[in-house]
Length: 190
Image (cartoon, rainbow, N blue to C red):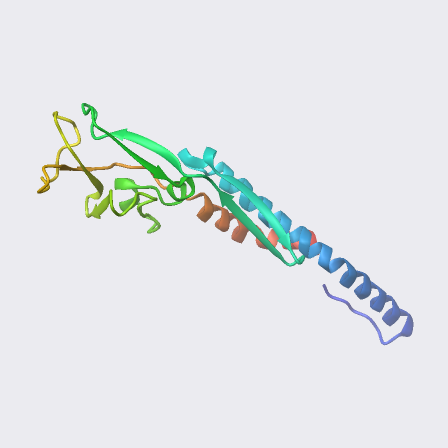
């Protein structure tokens, strides 16, 4: 906002009134601004949820008129898979859809070029990491395509997980807010 006034009592009074109205409206404009940014974040996160997006719900909460919190919630879900295409053995884990959507798992998370990859929520006791990706140990009684990497002393065989691509909905939501903050601020505050 730029004001150019002369030292004239009428113009100064008019400017004083305009500033008083602007100050009165400022708090409501801050709320509108924060709500608009939160809506952008939620829209992008929902759109970019990937394979696990359907299990995540997003909410927003405005506090004290100056702080807005966007929260993603999901319950752990059970996922079951075979050690290989010819295997009759299954493996089941409870995973967090938010972490799987954001970070992915397995081979894809390890080799993701963004540097944001991680194990998702595959627990440290049932899964581990090596340069080839995430793996687990299981008994093997057939010739599966999941070629054993090494034999454990317990007689179990190590299998690699190809995993899930990281969709990064939260990362993309933050970037969308960063890219649109100036435009939204201009629309709301003038």
